[in-house]
Image 1 (cartoon, rainbow, N blue to C red):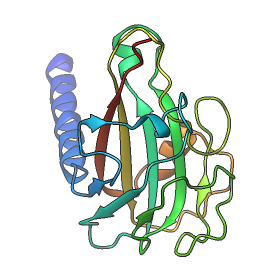
Image 2: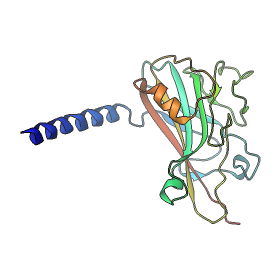
Image 3: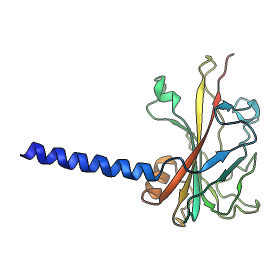
Image 4: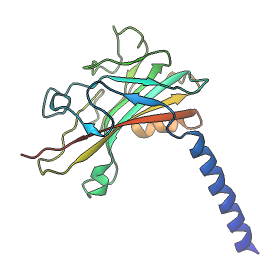
Length: 191
């Protein structure tokens, strides 16, 4: 009887998780003028080049979106055994919902200033422990990497302090994500 009860609880929990996941499916459209979805990240946006952040724009935000957040990471490093977790290239939060996007070559300062529409935006900590964008820099072995630029639509003004990394941001957003969307770019170094 205990096994049957545990099975029911697990089934209900799984169903609940599936329902929550379904509500947060990719509903936000994310794009850039730098490359198309599944396109190649330009050299100037890599850490081998000028290390300039790409421009991002979004649309189709869910009703009730108050604030946005961004996480860019590389999950391929896990698949090929380089790291245990995806390498984090960019964390940004406190982005006003009415901002149309992020300009190219955005400041790497922790607190973004002087950019119309982005008042209050914070560059969180990337995988190097520094604020701001850190472009693709895979080993020069010809392995194609994927870079996920995921934008989250949030239902509250979380007013988060500077200095958060990916894990802290995900914990703070828990229960506030209305939906998300992703732009994926690829990069490889052949030399």
